[in-house]
Length: 151
Image (cartoon, rainbow, N blue to C red; front, top):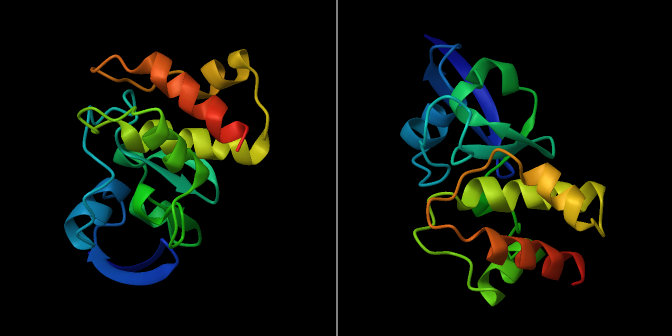
């Protein structure tokens, strides 16, 4: 065990943890955050996605020690006190069903829109490749990303 300090949603947190422990466990177990979610545990579904210095990262396979000097943002911290345009777009398009996959979709889309403010369909599809949704809301998600890009 080691004392590790991580910056999550703009706040510094010191935890006592195994340096190799997945970031996901630190976020959920040590910090008590309800998102991100544990999905597959293999970085294949996206439910555990967070932003690390603006890049989407699968927290289930990211050692907590490796992100000590980075800024971590979860879905709860995305809007910094107000809804992010991707969150507003998901609501407007009525995307959420079960909500389990939202971390992957929204955080990855937010990162895409930061780099490419007006992505075309292919850029959106490429960025979102690998994120799974069992509710099959993929077309609504595409509409939401386009809506956010035009906001």
